[in-house]
Image 1: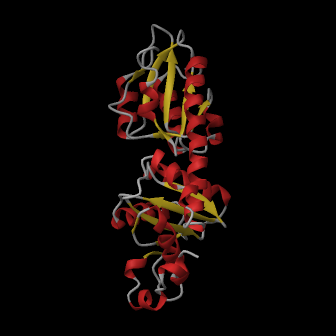
Image 2: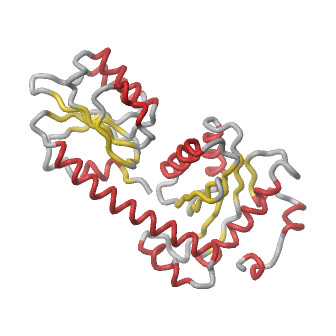
Length: 287
C-alpha cells in the first residue's frame, strides 16, 4: 500500500518552504524516497519514489528537462527540487511536467531535506508495516477462512468492512522477478485500497468496489509491459469469510486459460458451460 503524494505533502506544506508547481499531484502514490543529483543514476529507481534534488547540476531548462524525463521513464512518483533564492523553475519546465502528469515541487537551499525525509520515512515505514499485516490477514482469509479472528479486525481497521464485496484476481506467466515487482507496484498504484502479494511467481490481488470491466482495463494496460501476462478474475463475493471462494474461482479460471480458452484475461463469470462443470460447493471451496 503506497502513500498518496498529496497526503505526504499535507504533512509539510505549512511548516516547510516546499511549493507544488504543477496543477496537482496527479493521484501519484509514493513507495519510498531517493536523492538523485545526476541523471546517470536514475536507473537505480524502481518506480514510485519521491526524488529530491539540489539543482547543483541542472542550471538550464534543457538539462533540467532531460533529468526530469529520465525520472519519468523510471516511473518516479515526483520531484522536489531545491533552488538558490534568485533562481526559479521556468514555465516551460512546469508545462512539460503537467503534460506528463509528473508532480514537481520547488524548495530552496534553506529548507531541511533531512527533516522532510525523516518525517516522510516515518510515515512510509508505518505504512509498510501496515501493508505487511494486511497481506498476512489476506492469506489467513484465503487459507483459513473459518477463523475470522485471524483477519477480520485487521481488514476493518483498514476500512475493508465485512458487508463489502471482494474479488480476487490472479496474474501470472510473468517473465522475471524484476517484472513481477514492477507489475506489483503498478497494481498498488491502480488500486489504492487493494492488497497484492506474490505467491509462487504469481500475483494475488484483492479488490473491493471495482467493477470487472475496470479490472480488465488495468490488466490490459499491464500487458503493454508484460505481453505474455495471464490474468484470471474470480467473481465478487460478499464478506470477508467468502474471499476464499473468490480465490478458488480465480484459480479455476486461471487453469482454463490456454486450454479451454484462448483469452489471456479471463473472468470466472465468462466461463459459460465450464462454469457449471467447475462449480463446487462452498464447503469444498473453503477447505
